[in-house]
Structures are given as C-alpha cells and as structure tokens.
Image 1 (cartoon, helix red, strand yellow):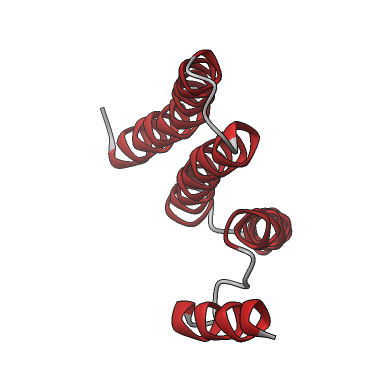
Image 2: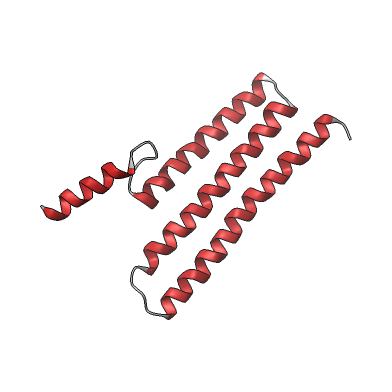
Length: 124
C-alpha cells in the first residue's frame, strides 16, 4: 500500500466518523428527548435542537477534515483546491448558522458578552 492509498483510506475513515457522529448524535438526541418528554420536563424541544445541532456541527467538522485530507494530500491541483475551498466555505457557513441557532451568538463572540447582555435585557 503506497502513501496515496493510505491517505485516501484515512480520508474515508474520517468521512465515516463524520457520518457516524451525525447519525449517533441524532439517535442520542431523539432518545434523550423521548426520555425528557416521557418525564414531562420543560423545554424538551430546545434541548433536542441543541443536542442535535452539536452532533451535526461535530459531523461537519469531521467531514471538512476528511475533504482537506483527501484534496490536499492526495490530489493537490488548482481545480481540486478550488472545489475544496467552495466545500469548506459552504460547510463553514452551515457551522456558523448552527452555532448561532444553538447558542444564540456567533462563534467569534465571547460567551460572557452574551450572558451580560441577556442579564441586562432580563432586568430591563
């Protein structure tokens, strides 16, 4: 097995991990939500969305890593790097959108800033 085949196999393995993270996360989020719903707890939907969103974010990160491994290490051409750039751009936008949905803030915003503004709004 030569270097290129090893890198391709690693890329496929990381791809599989990304898909597994999404699938297992979705199943775990559903099971957790069903459990909370059965116990009639509050905010089941919000917790389900956060859990599922985090699973999708983890899966997206792994899928981007796999694309980078395969594109840069296996076939580094201008065309493949351009395709990779578009894929990373789309997945980054999806990740940022999910982060905003889950936490209510952009990834580059500090958590304490949001917590302080939330407290100020609650007191107003």
